[in-house]
Length: 283
Image 1 (cartoon, rainbow, N blue to C red):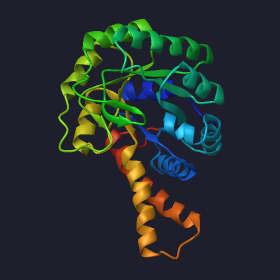
Image 2: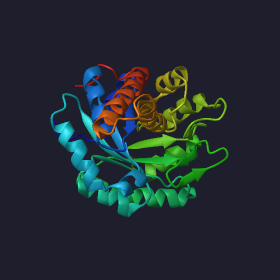
Image 3: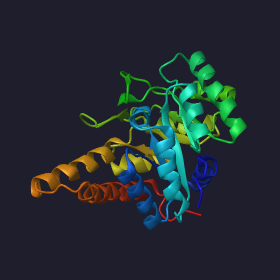
């Protein structure tokens, strides 16, 4: 089937109390691994690319790969721009055929975040493309963006933000971080429930790589409708390549490395789809 937007996908998750797994992909092998797993698990799925991934190739290149595989997929597939840095990049992704975009103004003061987000929302609505934004800071490092300290989302600010921007989904800060965690993360999971009470759009959990299954499940139960996974997929992919090189250093065919890496990524995706509760939820 053709690529679908995240609108109906997240709305269904919100109504039925599960989350859609959103997986960052870096190349063709990861695209194939994620969609193949989604088909096996009969789960809706979102594939994401960050600005650095796009710089590595282009929005046109990644859209073409994902769209080609989605065309033969038996489950709904959405292609999402993760952590879009500005209007120009969001516009380029939409025009290239992405079916969902994120604009990340979380490093700005509230008023500037609202302005930056609304500019993207206004354009995206003319194309029928939903927009995700972020309020509050997710710690750690994502591409060239780095955040420190407590950036948990204020529920009243979230209410104002959604009302003024008309954004379609909202990533909130509850103590998660991008990258792998050093020590045990302390999450304000009750904050998910509080924000859910005052906004009506689906909520998004960033920085889920390295979180326990129990933490993710509770966040979903409290209202998270989309959960992002990136770092652990990259690590699994690369570790599989390293392992094959150590075990069979004479290997020179790139496809053999790709097969092993795809298998490793599939295992991660399969587990995370079960944790999110989206297995069997594909229309």
